[in-house]
Image (cartoon, rainbow, N blue to C red):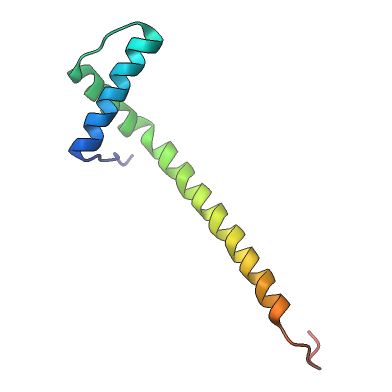
Length: 84
């Protein structure tokens, strides 16, 4: 599975989010190394699921927009003698 790569700044922000989550929700402190390890684990093992869902959502949005365009184009058609 493909690993999602984060910039240094993104990873710093994620580390802080993991540390805060563990402290506030689990009443446990984790260090920098442990938080980075968890981020790497999630990226390698779960990231693909989130990435694929994002692609599916994007496809649905694009299909919906294309359907809207089709409807608009059909409404612009002029009547002709041509029978489909």
